[in-house]
Length: 187
Image (tube, rainbow, N blue to C red; front, side, top):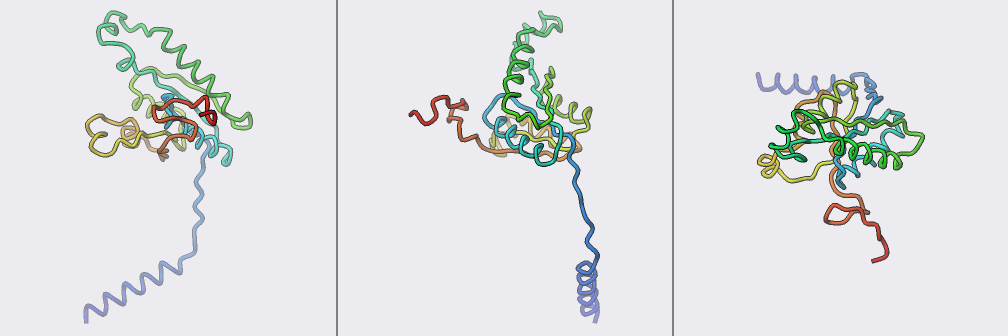
């Protein structure tokens, strides 16, 4: 007897859920953060973000984090006493300035360069700018390698409040070594 009551309650619950008025769910996207490291995966993410920004009218922040641990040896970091070589910042700003030429003028976009660990910088900028969405490339290393190496995209997903769209793969105009193919079609 208890079994029939449970089945009946489940059927009633299903019917009640199906008959509920539909609530319109609207996701608002005003600010998109697009971190880049210059890789093909990041460039593909930039292209996806451009499309999303054009469709939603969102403002894009294209950022690059200068990771001192990757670019300067520990000895040099100590000897610099907190001074960040201007060349690293200038190179990042120059890269982003060149990248801005890819973004159509109707898409509202600006650039930003941060100094520090990329994952932490992305999370901090997302919070500071109140980003509604982060669009970033991922290398697709797989579970084991990302556990050993660590993953910026994994860090970001664990430490931000907004949704994160991970874009996999390489753009069609990039080669296997992660370089832009200048002579595309002339091979």
